[in-house]
Length: 351
Image (cartoon, rainbow, N blue to C red):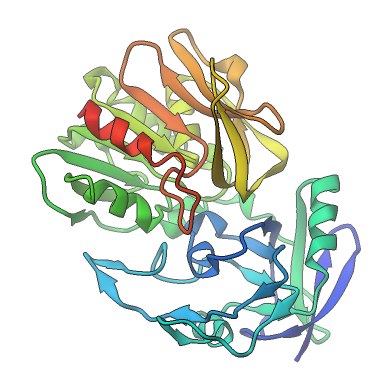
């Protein structure tokens, strides 16, 4: 079935459907990964977003099955596809991979997510990189739907768990605040020998006993989850180690009293260069976020930890004397890169 991607600037791109055939609206973003679409599509950070893949051929290695290990889907970053829609240049109808059990098209239909191909995705990416944030909609037939800005709502509440869950075993317990947590954060912690208690985004942390606290990634505007920041602030006095990831970076900053702002472009890719402050060490990182910390608003005692080599924006903060730290990128990135996985080792050592 024919479909079209319509951007709020009036641009229209015609394509062909290969997923669920329903009209949807959201924020249009892109990803530069050559591989890893099963992990990317299940990343809760993409909730409310129409994802454009810049790599031209998508679907050629299919999609794994629903195997579960340690209570988590073995091959995905959450239990289902999280993007609002998928836009690709060329969709491969045939697939070949040792653990593939279905096609990308079949998987999208199972999750009721639209997909269209035959689109000049690199042109769209250039448009996004020149204009900045763009709203869009995928439309089938002559149906009319309004544009929708997902950042005006609390997306975190829709992707967080409802009840606490426990993973792994160990002498140390880490509480993981789930704001749209990627499964590989859980895996990265469990593999390092700690027990993980994953709790909902608005969980009263002051009632929990833990050796360390991790603030997960998640979608949308951090201002929508002020309650989470307040709960983090309430446990500062314990001085237990805290690690924030992506949205968790912004939550930690808000808990400290800093502010955030919306980036014109956002950081969307698997190859964002981040520099360790005070050094010439640059790490390649995976990111998907549209907001950043205003470094000038950081209170006394807080320091920038990493910065983005492309635009100079903040990529992490740390406390001068207390074991509090966070990064804007994904040290647990799947399918990669894994240049910054050592951050989990440093956090575990602090426990």
